[in-house]
Image 1: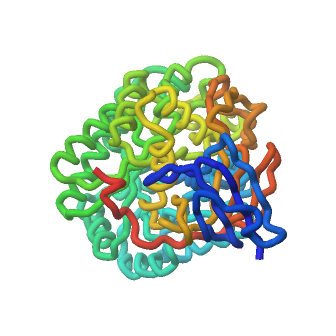
Image 2: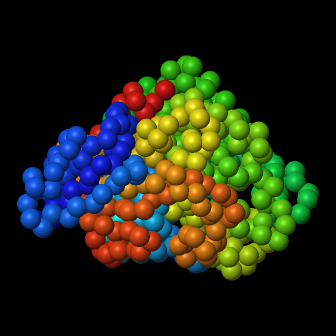
Image 3: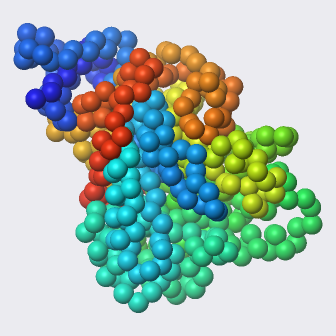
Length: 466
């Protein structure tokens, strides 16, 4: 039996913070108390001294696209390389994405993705399953999907051109109705396709990277949220909005919440800290993602929403391409959309919290670990420091100042969208189920050691919804 004793660290859970020792046996936390002396544990126990460090539950990146095959190519970060980014960033579990092949077997899509990830991931993972059409037998598909351990559906209110959009309102409502009946959480990429098509029809300017922000305006996001929010309200069901990007979208969320909508809102570091000025210049293509970067006003509105507790989850939408892949086109309609971000997540959000002075490390843990674990049915095995929880632990130095650059991060994209940003706080050691996967700047993850985590009840709990 492998044992690990972490002594004298500041343990930070969403519900409590205390200086204490923590004992791990095999993959689980078995004891938390003020002091555990070395003499109390069996010979051979590994002892880690964590003075001056925070001990956090493993971070959960609730929105990733590792090894995504898209537009005739594949993303830069494979499952192996995504796992490496995760370990360096204190991330021990990711929620990735399974595509809908529209062949009438969602469970098969999920199982194919699980098998591929299980062979190559070095951190744990769960999934949200894409769903792009209403069809006969869908209830049976969703029932089988639920039995396979995936209880979150991913939908889109845009991308008609690639077949992701469910166009008919009655079919969209029918899908929502089935998901409510089966207790599945619906997550939605919200941009109104009709608005985007209208803007494109009327647009006469160049299609360079800065045009991306014009062609997919924030009004489209607000209208997309309004569409799915009204259906969820009518059916009295919960909703998960992915990567909220705008002040207009936030205002629509507020309006729907005032009417009683139960909604989990996710945003990302790039919508909090980057703006559309990044789309200018020779590197503009590196900053194209969907939805596009917005204005400083949008950044500030979303930052305030985080500080106010209106945003429940911060994830990354990690979808990385190399500089060469990104710059293979200068037309914003064909630039490969997406950026890396898993590794930078914890340090960026902790720095924001520390600089704001309005939220502390417990709230950071909630945004990046506990709330995602609850939303996706992984809690309390994940997202908590409790006896019986998985020993997913991060030894985090809250005083470590460093600069994000392509030399200090590990994405195969070979760039960071946060290049040059000075941050405070850095993961020094990352443990996955009691095993060190990153320490002293060295990556120790084992390909294939990542486990699929089945989802239990999803989207529950007043602590993650408004």
